[in-house]
Structures are given as C-alpha cells and as structure tokens.
Image 1 (cartoon, one colour):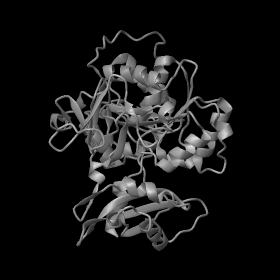
Image 2 (cartoon, helix red, strand yellow; image 1 turned 135 degrees about the vertical axis):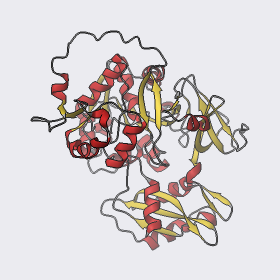
Image 3 (tube, one colour; image 1 turned 30 degrees about the vertical axis):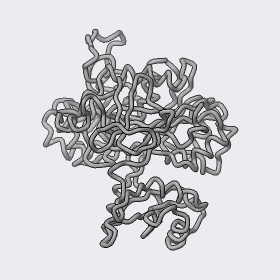
Image 4 (cartoon, one colour; image 1 turned 45 degrees about the vertical axis):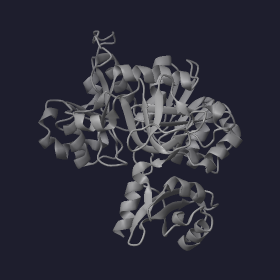
Length: 452
C-alpha cells in the first residue's frame, strides 16, 4: 500500500488488537508478492485498488484469501468480484475500545521484509517490546515532544519510517504524511507548517539541496534533519551543517535491531561518523574470528540492545547466523575512534578485492561526488582477468550539466589516493534504480553493467 490513511489505521489496529501487520512494497509484482504471502503465512491482504489486477492473477494459488479477505483501499465504486472495499470492511465498526487483547512483550507486532538490496528478502520480526522501545528511545534521542511537528514524505512501508512514526504515536505530536517524496513540496511544507522534525534517505536530501527552490530560510523551523538508510556522502553533510547548523542527525542501523545516532551537537566535530549506540545498546568491532578489535582497526560492526529482533520469521537457521551469542552481526565494516564514535567503511559484501587489496567503494564515492557535475555516485566491482576485480562508477549528473565518461575517469584517477582505486570504467545514468524506501539498488546497477 502507498502512503494512505488506511495504512496508518492498520498500524494502530495492530498495536491495539494483536494482529500482525506485514507492510509490503508497492514495487512488488506477482512473483514477489507470492513469495511474501507464502513466507509470512498471510491470511488477509489490504491493498491499493491499483493492485487489484495483480491480486486477481495470483489469488487462485492463495486459497486463504477467499471469503472477503482481499480488501481494496481507494475504491470509489463497487469492488470487483472477490474483493471488498475498505469502506465496507470497516462499516459499522464500533467506536468504543476493542476488547483487551492481553498482549505481552513477546507477541509479534509486525514482520518487516528486508528491502532486497543484498539478496532475497527475509522476514524480520518485531514484537511489541521492540516497538515500544522505538516509541520511547527515538523520541528521547531526537528531542521530540507532543508539540513537535513531523513531516514524512517517504514510504511508510519500510522500517526506517517507524523511526519517526512510532514516536509520534507515543507522543501524540502532529504528523504530516505526503503521498510521495517531492523536493519542491517538502520545501514548501516545511515553510508553511513550521515542521520541526524530518527524516530522509540520502537521495532525498540530495534532491532537496540541489532543487532550484531550496532556501535555508524556508527550513529554519527544523530542529532535526535526519539522514538514514544509507551513508550520506560528506559533501552533503558539510553543505547541511553550513546552511542549517545545529540540525543534522545521522542514523546508522539495521532493521534487525542495532542503531547508532550521530547527534546534532556532534555533527560538525564528528562529521565523518555515524555516531554512538542508541541508549541501552552496546557495540563492538570484531575480526573474522570474532575477536574484538581496538579503536582505529576495521572489522565487522556488531551490536545488541532492546531493539534486537526475536529473529527471522520461520528461519532459525538465518537467525543463528545473524545473531551469535546475543550479538547481531551487521555485515558492515567499520571502526570506532578513541571516543567510541562509529565510522562506516562499507558493506563487507560491497568490498572490491583488486590484486589482493581491499578496496572500499565508499572511499571512491566520496571523491567522485566532489566533481561539480556529479549529483550521485555508486561504485562497484567488476571482474577483471588480471586484478580479480576493478572499480567501476555509475553517476547521475546535476541538472543541465554535461560530462563524458572518459573525462570523469581521468578526473577521478588523477585524484584517488592509491592506484588500486582507479576506475576502469564509468557509466552515466538518467537516474538510479531504487527500492520503495528510496535506497539506491547498487546490485541492479552492477548486474545491468555486467549484462552489457
């Protein structure tokens, strides 16, 4: 479902009644939906009316949805055969409190499926204990109050949206929900509604800062601009801290349940960091043998705390691999400084091994985004007979800018700090493929490049 009030209602219903909600991407097609429905053993679907055709094609293989269990939101007329309009589904519902569901900490609130940026999706379980801590811990970390005004313009079916959605439910603050992200509309909304808190993924922050209508004065009401979902390149962090000082937060985290936050008070002196663990959380950096490393040494980021998932739905094997002795293994590489602040190096799976040397795409991306014509960049490894792998860059350009691939390769290779970071190839795209959360799908870019 897209950003609709019916979806907001279902989040509330899950909190009150004990039903388990499984928010699903609007980008899914027949096969992807079938996989999720079967994996989570779904018994009912509530969807945008525009998904009626897809659901109609696959419902013959899903007998559990017969008998009024396919609900369509946004139907302005009688629902198609076999479907029920959301208005009819809730018609006659009592306005009084539902019976006490006698929920306990361990009861499941939702199953969030991984975005698929690194492989097949996995069902990440969050219980009511975890979600209650989302409410309170994030409200505290982001200095939210009942008087806060929160704007959300990204999709609310992905877990990052819960980072401001659940504190809003807890506090009873004002929550403004846009149907979809539009940089111009966001700028205008912040100015008109005096928005105090907003979270965005890096691509949205970049779009806002690069928009012709961007004016820092229009955003002066903001007390928080938070980046999450992927690392925000330093070029854009510096721009934010310069034009809107004292407002930038960055969050690093996994849906599985470990979070660090770079507070606005530290965003300049620790600009390259993603902060420290959220309160009541612990972190350590370990080598391949699981031995904890000292500050400054790169290893795998591991963490634990009250946001840790109970596990992947019906996949104890995957849970055991991800959570070892109570510690969540992130699959991300990083290091901490002497003050305990975390610095991301890259996803371990994204690391390029060229001539036996570890090459981190993020280091090259930080350089390339400094080119005046480049808006976004994604670096990945491509097979090479001599070196094993070599770096390749994909970029999008600023509006009105022109740049040849040869010129960008030359510009980059003159500036990298080591020969093994030199680009072997480059492609210029109109736009990057993204998932519903707005994250860049680097894997799809790489696959398309290799297919050519």
